[in-house]
Length: 127
Image (cartoon, rainbow, N blue to C red; front, top):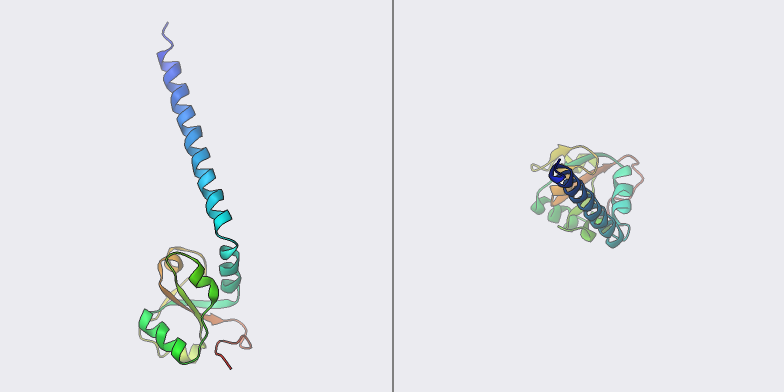
């Protein structure tokens, strides 16, 4: 009786275990290097009732109008512009496209995101 099939199964299992361990190490390293940015992004999203992908041009226009950028967007790679905007102003943006309010592919791939706050008292503009 040959031990070759048994050894092949053991090698395959060892490769799977090593791969899982490498992925786990990578995830822990990413989390440690993030310095809490994902928590801060989740915190910003918790204050939003709606989210929209907008163009970079519209985002720059909103910033020049006095809307403030959330700092956590510049701490991820690729960097993104995250701005809280009132619904009336957002209605005038042609480039807006509604996305789910979550850390999903739409949000992560967007270069600029406009958020509508739950609380109207949240300052979206600089005084």
